[in-house]
Image (cartoon, rainbow, N blue to C red; front, top):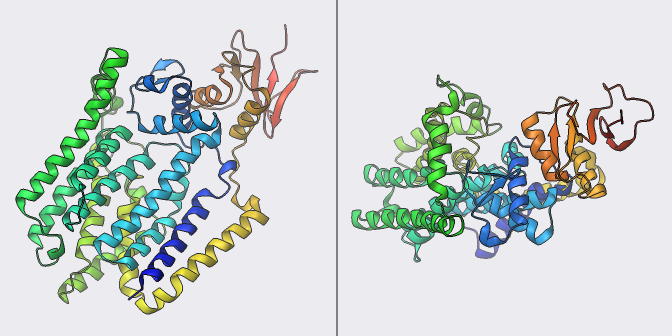
Length: 473
């Protein structure tokens, strides 16, 4: 058994490694995710308003009802405090991802013990897609955090921990809805399924047994508080704008996405197979967890059953839920990481010697953290992910500030017009147009392919892109 001081030391080592990994070179990162420039623009426009008017979101000056408020609010708060910049858009999401690492540990500990929590956190920390997605302002990091936070307080309820667990779980559920709407339903669905598992496998779940009456009261508390939070936001919308945000959200976005499937006529049932089966390197441990649990069951060792079922409820709930919806995006399922980390931690917990684990875990985390810090300081190019356009626009924003606010910049590259419009609006406050757009004052060109007129003035350049003055005819 680890002493309390040993437990604190090992957790601190894992958490420090998480900070090193998630926060490393964060000022050199960019808005590289598919929708992150859009949410950054919404936050930028919110930050210019009074916080009392943040219930009304806009993107490029047009009212925005596609998603609820939480991620834009979080980014806007940071921009309000520290100014509009790429880093201001990234840091709040990195904070949430760091807290998600703590949640993976806390849930693992609640399901089994300290060592299992450490292993779940360690697996999450070495999930490349979690690190990548956890450093960009998309909706999924907040959605995953609040779903898992709600489930953590649900586990506290099952373990009969003192406190207002139903209230806290409900608040987390409400913020999950505010993060991305319908996918938040995963939290109460896992709650109900976990309770049913306590009834069917009563011996394995003896530490999680609660009465029907207590469970129903807890469910009503979770749903009531969560939906109550949504009602308060909608009352705020009515007070400030005269209309209900969520009625417009349901009538437009939910109708368009869930009912009309954004025009998709056929469900591609295998769409998410690659996401699941390419969950490297941990998918192999997830496979291994199944025969190991069968073996444990026949040996009448059921201590891991709650963690096994909880992990699979989360992971399968995510993939099955999004598979049913015709319209798909490969990043939609990026909220399964904590559940999958719990599953992958099961073989590690069974196969590693507890004595050896306790001796080396803190040392291993410390050595890796020091190694990452050393190489990131001495060879930063190893951690550089080239995104020349985003770096060019960030540089232009610092140098020219609001010079091109409201102006049109002609796009003469293969930049996606939709994503490009948000990038130019966020960094320069400018609109993007076609290469021959009338009234454009600047052009974005690719220096490797463009034929520049003689004596053209290059305002700013960074291989291969440049912003150049439009020649006067």
